[in-house]
Image (cartoon, rainbow, N blue to C red; front, side):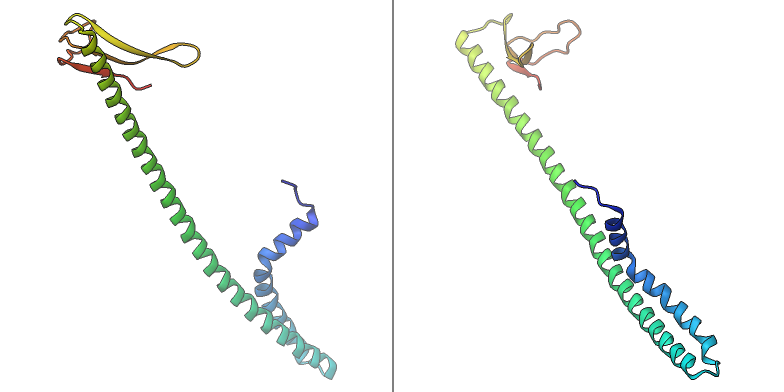
Amino acid sequence: MRTKSWPGKLGDWIYDHWHLMAATVGPICIAGSNPWRNSLDQDAKTRAGWVFVIGVVLTIIGAVASWRRSKRITRLEADVVSAQKMRDDLQAGYSELVEAHQSICQELIRVLLSSIAARMELGDSERISLYGHNGTEFLLVGRYSNLNYAHNGHSERRSRSADVLQS
């Protein structure tokens, strides 16, 4: 993205804050015109009247613009809250889909390994393991055994159960 020059940044700042400048300059014009009103010079009184009118107009325009801007900001803040809630809902839904996908994959692996074990007629002391390769190493995807056993501190596994690991 191209950075703006200082005149561009100044223009953006003025665009964003003109309503505040108008609301500030207006009362200054109103207050500044009062000493001229008591002048004996008719031109000074006329200029004071115009400065007063300009001050009133600037004050009103600045106040109305500030009010309208605050309404827009309130709507934008509500839109941000709504978008954040939608994002959170989508993330929660995505997490649920990932969990469902993992559950389905685990069940498929369990069925596959039990089917292979049945076809191979594995005995109670045998088991079947499925490994995947990620390009550098083999990872255990699932294991199936017909046997109840406790091995090296592992909890006892139920008969005809599949031990499916998450990758």
